Image (cartoon, rainbow, N blue to C red):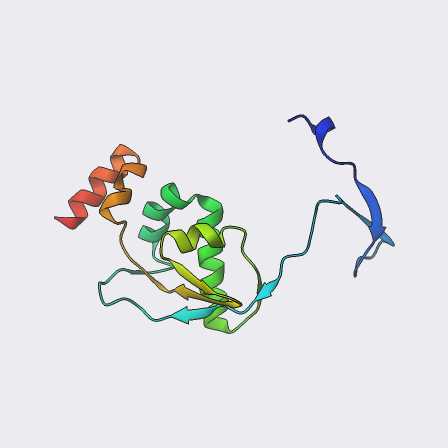
Length: 135
């Protein structure tokens, strides 16, 4: 898609901008704010969400945006803060890292190692490292 195929930009009143108008595409909409809660840790073990191994092994599976959303959710849950509903919330739920019940979103702060059925999504060098860690 070239830049000419995108919807036109319209001038709309700014919410709290210094300029009288900010430019927003008509397809943009606000995300609902959520207050994530901590989901109790599994007894199976794992790593704290901030551990480098979480980024190393889960980023190739989830993608960088979803991994960043996971970290933001965990931080907001620990601090008791609101957060715009993450774009990748559904993907995180599919992998069992968050659970969503209506307006309540619970996030794990202890992330399990990559399950066996997802190993094939890792690059070969990470797959070998993960297998070596398990032995």
